[in-house]
Image (cartoon, rainbow, N blue to C red; front, side):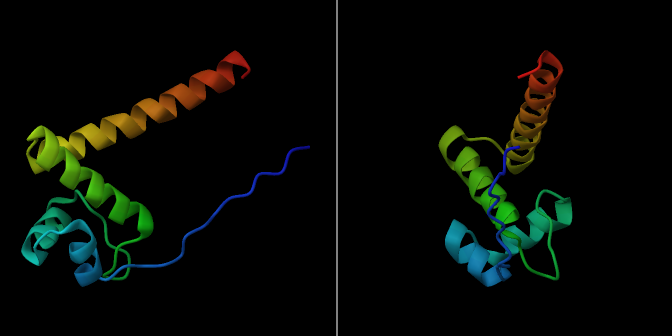
Length: 93
């Protein structure tokens, strides 16, 4: 039997903390939330949503993707990772 250690991050980030970490204006973060690209939890961002915000910001800045495109890239990457994990299970790995 194998035991896995899972690190659970419970900290929530205020919108102001998130905008400071990602170096984005508050109105842009609010727009991303309105569009459904970023999800709030009790009017705050969970760590995985803050990571998503920062990844979107890098895709926008470094690759010139618009915000919709950046969200789509992250969604597709997540789906590909899930499909690969399922494939490994089916193959017995």
